[in-house]
Length: 239
Length: 246
Image (cartoon, rainbow over all chains, first blue to last red):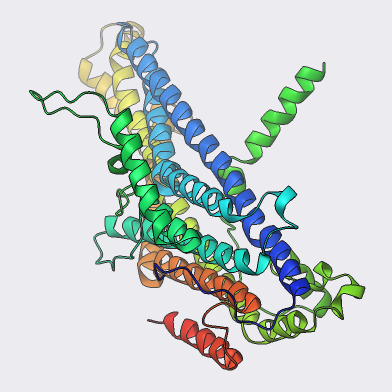
């Protein structure tokens, strides 16, 4: 994706066509994708919480049963040992599924993509101003920034799979993905030109400077800025 | 009452979103190849998958947008079938990947379970013997300990005795453990051979790339803003097809 703002469409679309396409794109691409991310975020959160809670509960129960069994000198509660072992295996199974689906990682990908889409949607004029807006100018920019976000999401997903594959000690080819901050800058550049990017960078730097706590020189213990706590370009290994 | 109903409805909805309900693999598999359905079903598919379908055009609107209608016809002819073919393959490999992984995870669990049960049945009676031994001695009125040992070992072959049952179950669980281990190893080999994870990721990425081109073509965005746009579209689709096997 070039850093220069995309040229306005040189198509032979009429104004009516453009308005129609604009609404279609909003509905079919932006909103539906946003709904998809929302659903997936909720589902991943639910599963992550469920497996963590369930495996913790099962492990606690397993330890409890093992302790009770060991504290019985007569050995009449010896059968509890077997339940303890089975529960441990059950907890291990839940952990296995947790690593398999890696909900937390998926959650981060979908959350970033949703935020990226919301950022891209800033280009869309408010409903009240829609009639006065030049759809012919807004539409190509909206497509460029939205597709950038969606492409990055797909690449991240591909990277996620490749990282899982890497766990199996197979050579992988690195997929290029961009961080949220860079994505934001690109969207702003695509939408409003290089000046906007510069002003955003300055604004971010000012916000970071204002929000950063005083530096403890002795320990060099500055809290990382927003940019450095962003998701790494290389996602962490799954599981 | 309404609160209880809401709670139950919410819980039920949550349960249906848990991975073992919503994301469990289809054990009978998903077909690898896509077959184009009839026109009506195809339009419904387009609508469901967030493509533009005739349902988006009221009849009176179709004549007002001839260029869009022509573009949609081009896309439907050259791009959409490839998208669905890749998407179908992606779903097939995704299901295959999760099916294998579920087998490995469940296999590990069942192996541990049956191994534990086998161990319990092997170790269990041996620990029971000392408590049973005095009873044998009491009834035998001081017979030799060797006799008790002989009786215990003889119990192993007596159906219905504690020792006999334990041996039977120990053997049974051991066999189950071995069978599950072999079953898992078989699927591990299949998984390594077909490499479903890599294929799933690749086909999904390519399908989504086509979806991006769909909207770019429809909007006459670069590179589809020149007179040879249809040729470019066909070239793009061809390149995507080639990448499937790279």
